[in-house]
Length: 444
Image 1: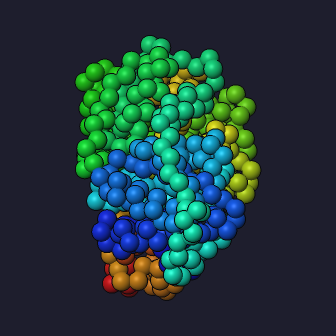
Image 2 (image 1 turned 180 degrees about the vertical axis):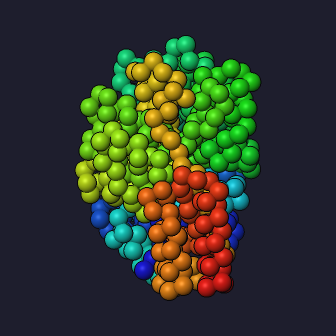
């Protein structure tokens, strides 16, 4: 059992365990010890735009150096950029300092291996084992050195531009970008502008505190308003670390991750590049499953989390998968979710078809979906509680093939997430409320 690592690294509120300077110093040292034991002595560190990134970067660097590992600092860069640069620099590992879509006062640490994939369980467990030992600094002649990579943004910009092929152009498109005052602020405008689009930007003035604050993928309505104001063809909203994307069509309508996954899959079907089937999650809208079935594209669901989507893609040797939240993985382009690359894949579908984003989404009808978060003392026992299981079985029987039910314990807070979706919005809402009441009484 992991003590510190969750499904997406280590995350928390800055100043509270485990996101404290003393712990991060030890984490850097422990990770360095594990890397060094396997002959790995070159690690890249990137971060998003949170003010705490300065502090956490410095203590991680010190810990790695104490373990005898060289550190190469990238500065503010999107999470997928660090995965890519770890590969191209032939580094042994990459570290991301980011709280993703969370507010500025949260932060976290994610690791990539030399191939740009998240660390295997065995390595995370080895790092946790080292954390339980006493910190010992290597001899002075073996201390790690620190370097700064100044051309990291340019390298990643070129990679993004090349992800859709050399002939791809965005001439004539008016695109509005919302960079969430995060790690894409100095990357995304160059990518889309250099490909020929007329670019308008918002959320591109980070101050250390405004990351994700009322903007970006978590808050797409301001971008929708801006698209309408400037008469844009499309809006693109990233989250704080740039690994997810939500888009806006020319009418100001939000296009979520499920719809984007459908658009990309349909385009790839038309050019015979689906690469097997599509992986969604337990939360993926039933409308996506039905639309893919109509195109005879296989679809399976993984647990919630891009980590599990990727694991399922690798297991089946498929290419494309993603989440409703906008994490989309195109394995033939990237090893992880990449907001900029996913947006470009969507724009490539628009360019190939000659249709607008709104027209491309018509083939998928989203079903009404309701989520109720129920605070409980022991959320992980929800699937073992007879009264809850009985209520879920009754709800599923009543919905039949018109909908579905999902109850799951949150991995980040003491709540049970009750999700119901179906063809009738009123019925869906009523069923969700009834199940939430059962969970509240049974586990409260």
